[in-house]
Length: 410
Image (tube, rainbow, N blue to C red):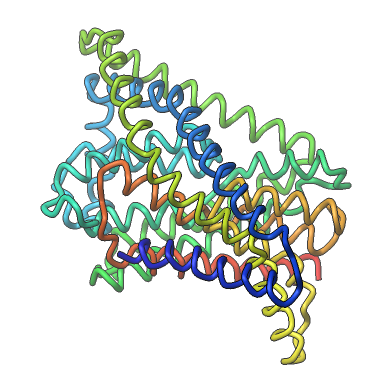
C-alpha cells in the first residue's frame, strides 16, 4: 500500500512540476524528456532483469547444491541462537537462516551480483512460512531492512570509481563509509526491533552486536595499515577467494552426501530463471516512476530547496551539493552511482562534495529497488512497516555520512 502511494506521488509531483515549467517558463522540452524517460526506464528495467537471469540461475543452482548437501542446515544451526532473537517467528533450525547469512555476507563484501539471488532465495523461504501470502511478515521486514541499510565492509566498486576519476588517494573514504554504513545498519535493526517488540537486551544479541563492533574496528585498523593499491588488491582478492571457496564447499558437501550435484544445480537454476521473469513488472513500475520524477526536474528543485533551508538557518551548506546522491540512493542504485560520478566530475574527486557523494553511495542501499525486487519476487503487496524502517535507516546513514565527512574532510 505504501509503495502504491509513493509510486503515484512520483507521477503526480513530476506532472505538476513539468506543467509549471511549461506554463511559466515556456520549457517545451520537459514533457518530451519525461516521455523519453518512461521508455528508457522500461528498457533499463528489462535489461536489469535479463542481466540478473544468468546470475540468478548460477547462484540459486549453487544454493540448491548447498541445500541438498546439508550446508544450509549447518549454517542454520550455528546461527540459530542469534536468529531466534532477531527472527523469532522463524522456526528453530529452518534453512532460511543459512540463506539469510549467505546474503548478508555477500552484501558485506560488496558482492552485489551474488547478494541479490541469495536474498531472493531467502525471501522465497520466508514466504513458505508466511501465513498471509500477500502481506510482509516480521522476519521478511527485518531481513529487508538488513539489506536496505547496506552494511558493507569492502566498498570495492566505489574505490575503483574514485581511482578512475583521478583521486589522489582513492581509499581515503574507506573508513568513513564503514562508519556510516555501520550506523545505518544498527539504526535499522533497532527501529525494526521496536516495531516488532523484539527484546535486544539479552546476552545473545548484545554479544553479537558487540562482536560486530569489534570486527568492524579490527577491519578498519587492518586496512588502515595498508597503502591504497594494496588495499584494493587485498579486498578484491579476498572477496573473490571467499566467493569461490563457497562454491567449492557447496559442491564438496554435495559429493560427500552423494548428491547428484549437476541435477541439483539445474533444478535451482530453473528457479532462478522463473524468479527473473517474475520481477520484471515490479522493476518496470519502480524505475519508470523514478525516471519521470528525475526528468521533470523535481529532484533538482528538492535539492535546491533543501540548500536554501539550510542556508537560512545559518548552518554550513557545503554538503548540499552531494545530496542528489543521497536522495537518489534509496530509489536507484545506478542513478545514485551516476550522481556520485557527476559530483566527482563537477567538483573534483578529492573535493568535499566528491568525497561525501562516495560516502553516501556506500552508506545505504537502494531501499525501493530492494522492496520492489524482493517483495515482488514472492507477490507481497502489503509492506507494513518495511518502508518506514528502511527509510529511517537510510536517514541515519545520510546524517552519519554528513557528520563523518565533516569530521574527516571538513
